[in-house]
Length: 85
Image (tube, rainbow, N blue to C red; front, side, top):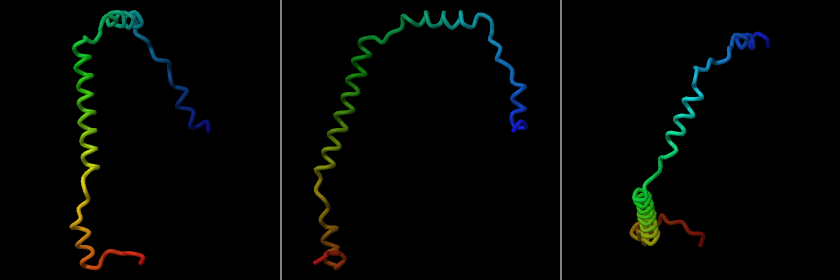
């Protein structure tokens, strides 16, 4: 078991560049003023509503389609349709 753990003894802690935390804080504070404009929020909301509406219309139109009866008639005429009668 020690043979497997031996390479782990050569692991050293990562060296952190100087002023890294200061740079990270400065970038966070610089980005605090960012926001999404009201116009873009409305455009995104209306786009999502349009996509949802189109999906609902397509799903309901697909479910309302009548099944193709020619396939069943073909099966009946060739005695391929199985019944338990």
